[in-house]
Image (cartoon, rainbow, N blue to C red; front, side, top):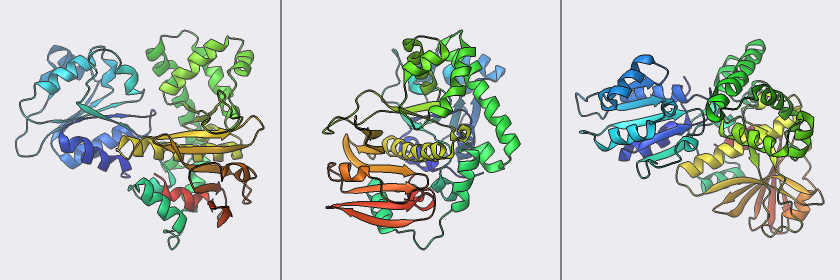
Length: 406
């Protein structure tokens, strides 16, 4: 059982102040395993799943009755898995939390975005911290600690891990099987194919149905079959609407649902102070990039997932507001990714599957951004710093470079 980077953050930030910890993330990314790991460490508490009939009955009759007592000094931990499926979960959880006789820590998990279900009156404001659990990354396969932003940037450009052998095997496994624990750790192609098919069916046939009450599930399954070939290119709802013979608003609505269910995420262009920048068209990426056939697109998607995971982790743990977007102008010049820190460009990142030469786009963008450091990630082992005026562009191999991110 691999330790997860989020475990220490949950204990240090949420449980230290007896806040409720909400952990959302893609289906089968390891939320239940993380919760049970924290519960095993605590040794006092209980794991309760909404799919268990006895728990549903007890929660409906008297929610406070499910809270275990503490025989010693240790504060119990109560894990409530998929609690948001209860229509009145916010009201009941708030009532239980506000009337506790003794301190108790709560961990609430959900595969759909919990903030979707937190809209409305009883928002539990001030009583919780939210965390997003991602599947595995190059760094997390080796060890669970995450560097702070400034520490990470300094370590990356000084090549602090140079003495350690880059985990090329972990990079190859992620590219071959995707980042989700079951196929990644088992590394069996046939089982990975079956797992992937079952997961997509569950997302569309169960999660999407529960979230949206949509009836066009067959069409949405067809849409998910078409999305992998669109990864890495500008996403056109118009073209997809024509292929599926539905309206553009329908495609946008379905895309929003798939975002909420952690099937895909979308990056929008950064436009501030960028001449002739695109303003609307973005790119989509899949949480499970193992489904992408084209190797270059899969590599770009893998880099996107590593960067998004890092941005989400830093944001959720109080390091600042980190956001991932892209740079592209109407002339087609682009940098694949740009990390914003509190709204200001912090680190541009280009992903190149086979080209270790600096991208031509650096000539346009390297000196126009307020950040003086940039990164180009390539598939094969490489390490070289290029100067563009007073800006530095590091071209580095993915196995080594991604090992500095979350």
